[in-house]
Image (cartoon, rainbow, N blue to C red; front, side, top):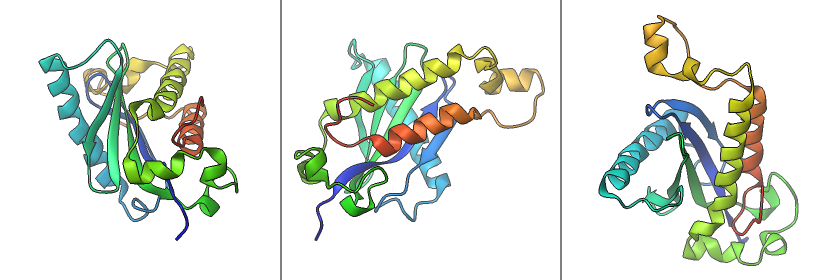
Length: 193
């Protein structure tokens, strides 16, 4: 059996009013047959964990909430909270990709990082996901800097008050491309994205 390295199965950006702003799904071994609606429900379950940790004072000075929940033996959900209360959730598939099916390169996981083959058997460290969370937060900050992007346009409260009909999802192609790049480029032990 070929060695496998954990991979990103889903990235969710959730607004401060707990509305989904963006969901990207990545093909992995465990999540290959997962319906996008299932990931939407999984991301919704993370909101209760964010609220419980914030209410109980478990949150530290860091924005990293670490492991939110293990969904099953292969999928695990990790969270990050921005200073504007936007939540970033990454679902990791511990079976990931086979090295030959890696979307970025044909080199094996052992050539990229010898520790990555152990991650599937032992789990991830909190530090393994920090580069991905920081890169996603920077991508979101870049989106906010765009003078044509109006974050209130993506708020369900504002949309209802203005009687706007339509999606409250982020539609910026540059942002969506950057999220896909981050999800495809991440592997355990990566230094920066």
